[in-house]
Image (cartoon, rainbow, N blue to C red):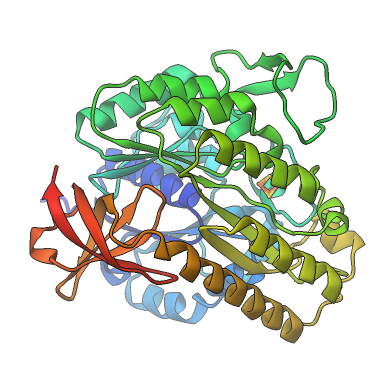
Length: 451
Ligand code: SF4
């Protein structure tokens, strides 16, 4: 009897990579492979890599000893490297990772079966058009675009993923409908610059003034629409589910988009709005195209229309030449805005990016760590105060994990809740939870009713 071939995918990095891995899994399974948790008996081991920080790459380089050992015992094993690290020259990767057999640009996913010597031939097509073998049966990621045209000076994405490409609207709606029909409860729309989906250009080509793009007529790519219209279409699909999206760029956050979120029942009251720094000079050096005042005005406009919105952010500390005063400005902004969460990163120069080429990495690692800790403290203090308002409230929670006799879920605003009566919690179901205890990073509560 023919032996079933097995595969394992190890994914590093963000949701976009997780979603790509689900498409890689689909292609492998279409070629007859079955998933295994153990690389020792796998025929194919895929590393889907991240390049956003040097430490992410080091984790892949660090696999060398282990994989070389496994390959000695498992002679059939083929190791594939894909994902963001493919922006490096092949010779460099080969030298660092001699254990890799196949280097695959994710855009060439259709070539994978033939590279593995399989008979299945797939017609060339955009890799996002492949089906996904979803890991979860209640939460699904739908990539609506990939790549980015923004060239923030610290960011590797325009190099690793290339120019922005938007998937046809029809394909996205079809995927969303199928998932909702299957009972999925949370749909995440993904894009590196998710809210520039479908836009070729703005007709009057004015530079964004930080206030609004309302009135500007965007030129829409063939087969697409604006991000706002895409959300409206998905919102119309019948069913009980949440819509989330990440990551929007402040410059593309139109008033129309704010209205769409405000008027929708299914788009969650949660926005991750990356600010990156709270100082105009640093923002300019980052090429973020907005000022602190623009960002604040945008937050005000969002809060005016959607008062119970939860806003999280992303920030880089220790950007080249960031002075202590400039860092203090970021702390000030954190206090002023009162974020509902923040993802704080220490600057790490990435090859070929403008900041790595033109700006000396002047802030020491020790100082970056100090700033990281300080900003986290500011965030924590704000969260403690803010989350107190949740005490006694009844919030809808999507249960997403059960471990060691405990159950956990997230609110619409992405607040983590530890459920005190876990016997009533079922993974993948919505429940109404009364918040009984609040904290900075997690809340506690009791299920009072199930949906
Ligand atoms: S918008 Fe995001 S993905 Fe695009 S270059 Fe800037 S940080 Fe990178």
